[in-house]
Image 1 (tube, rainbow, N blue to C red):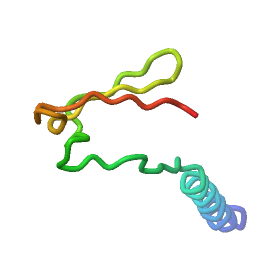
Image 2: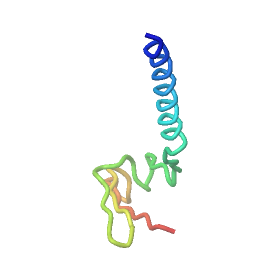
Image 3: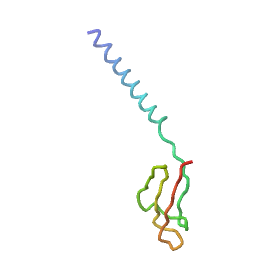
Image 4: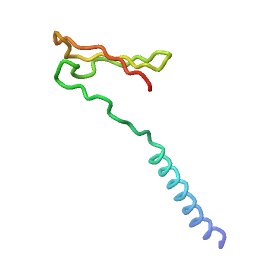
Amino acid sequence: MRLRQLAHPLATAIAFLVLTAALTTTVWGAPKYEVLHAFGASKDGAGLYSGLALDRQGNVYGTTSGGGPYGYGTVFQLTPQ
């Protein structure tokens, strides 16, 4: 009976420590993003039109739904530095 009384608080403490460690790792290990360019309603493009494409060199390509010289959208490329 004495062992059972000790096991419950011990199991609760271990579960709490495991959960705390898992949540802390998730928050600290979260990726950090930086906005490189905000497409607005100008000639540089307005709104992402479709998914992004990635090539072997790490370049990212995409299209916008508006902007450009005629307002039909733009194609852009991001290159890794």
